[in-house]
Image 1 (spheres, rainbow, N blue to C red):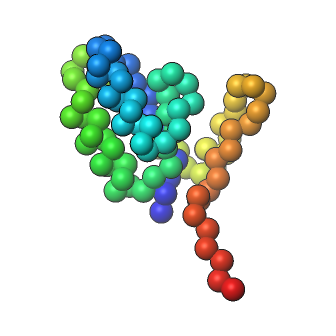
Image 2 (tube, one colour):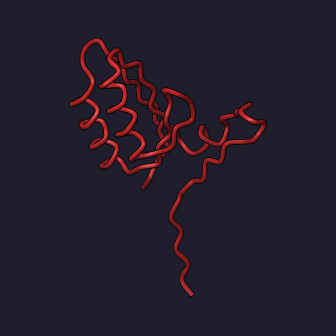
Length: 96
């Protein structure tokens, strides 16, 4: 089952900063310069964390927030006065 997560970072060196951003772009969507949201399984989330620990150093900071579905729906945004969509699941199957 996929869950929503927010990942924020503060990376000191420009090369590592680009690598962290590129890695996160492969998993989710940038909300702000150093904030990404991802919708992923626990397994893929652990893979992402492992990838980022291989890039970031002790002087860097990466923070992960896991969001329950109700918490994700309560997040408000003032960006362009549009709400952010946080669907419960991105994959739906219908049996006909």
